[in-house]
Image (cartoon, rainbow, N blue to C red; front, side, top):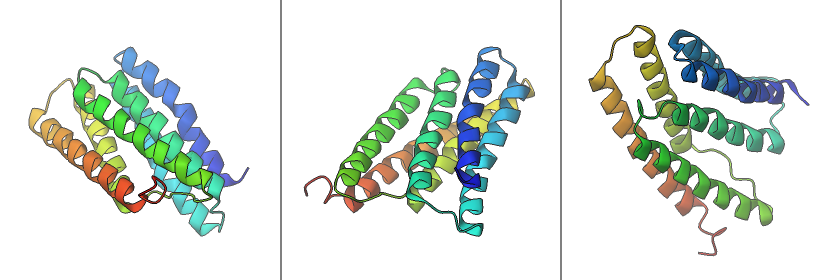
Length: 172
């Protein structure tokens, strides 16, 4: 296993302490673990490119680990993050994963595109904002509401783009 993939798997491991810290309402600790995991999402891609270790395995596990890490955190943050948004994100990720599985069955690896990356960044920003303000025992509703609707927008946009770009895998 190469270094970038080990970094990716470290993010998967960080899912547990993030979730447990949120459940314990230990906001600062949850924020610390989540920021480390979010940084690893940048770091694994950077290292893969820099060390010339980009692999199909890495492309696939990075996307799966992102979903587990972010979606688990979002679930733990219900009701601070609305359940409708979390359900929408999980549904989108399930549909996109199904498209990836269909494409893989035809020999094609579907990589993340810029819309999916923006979606992930906005989701992570929402989580960081919620955890940050909770760690200070304050609420900044305006920022949270803006990020909630930006998440919804980019979740929908990225789903539409993925479905369109991979319509051949869907038989269209």
